[in-house]
Image (cartoon, rainbow, N blue to C red; front, top):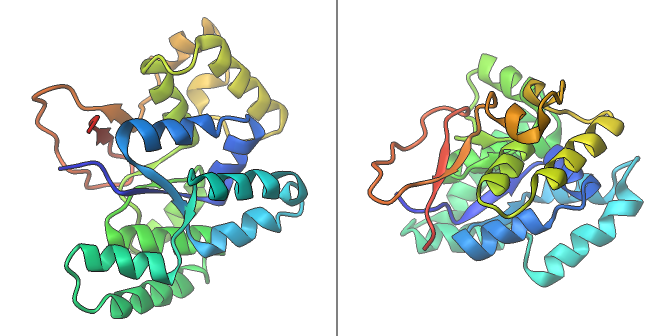
Length: 229
């Protein structure tokens, strides 16, 4: 099982990345593991037109697009990806994704709705902090992104890889809490520092060890294992 070609990012996760100015963590996934961060068009719209952060984060998003750090999985890119996988009629699959997304959007926000629809159809992981949306879609037996990682999974993973320091991680938590953003319960007390708190956090992102037998994720909360190409 190789690394996924794309990691879809939902609006809430991108907002946390931009708030903490940690777009470099997305670049780390792209350069070290050949995992391309991506969004569905609905998430692009939500980021660029966000009432609270749109004016501030739209330039950041566009810079990511220009540098190749972020791509929008529109119809052309999706069909090209499907064709590369040997799908004979990619347009039919794409229109089915749109239909699934429209059904989901009756119950959750459009970015989340179409992200789960595309991720589940293409077998891609999703980064999203919206546990409520996940539970709503699960109760309705809607297809879900497997796995669904959170921004803090990426932070803990990067910390374990030595990409960022403990002080950086503590700063991330402090910024998110100051902005009243979602922070996993393990990091709320903050007793003993980030490294101590991360020990009680079930991280969903890990690097596979040499020779390790990897089981393909079957549920949203399962671990995504990456290997260095």
